[in-house]
Length: 175
Image 1 (cartoon, one colour):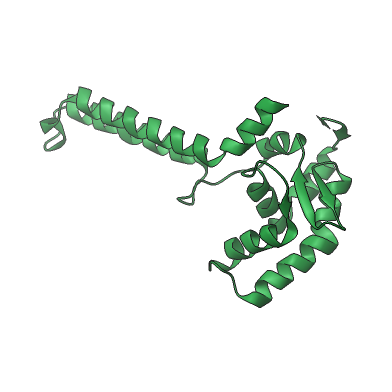
Image 2: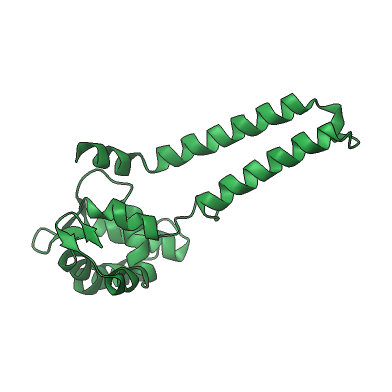
């Protein structure tokens, strides 16, 4: 696979995505516009891993060390990020967006965006069909109202999704 200047083999893609910490790193980097410090990145990943914000100090330190010594050099070598070891800064590269296609990115409610959209669409369809089939209670609301509510909820979820990943989209438009 060709990503900008770098060429990633299927084995490289699998290797990168096989590490939960690297996946979390990529998830975080896809939401930023510019370079971030390793400390900021470590704090965000430690919070995601521990479930506490801020994460306990020992967790943040462990994440920082593993990012600095292992994960960021690997991502830099593969051309996914630019890692300045001396300045302790990380900047996502253009190919990060392409790599994101292979990640099952979860929505903030804990399911993938695809699963969320399918569930919302199915719920709306069931409401419309049930209203048209004169199912008690559900048929009290006209099917056009069920359809309207379903479309509003889907549009809201889509807007939320776009807002969550707005910086990756902006970066993609700049390139």
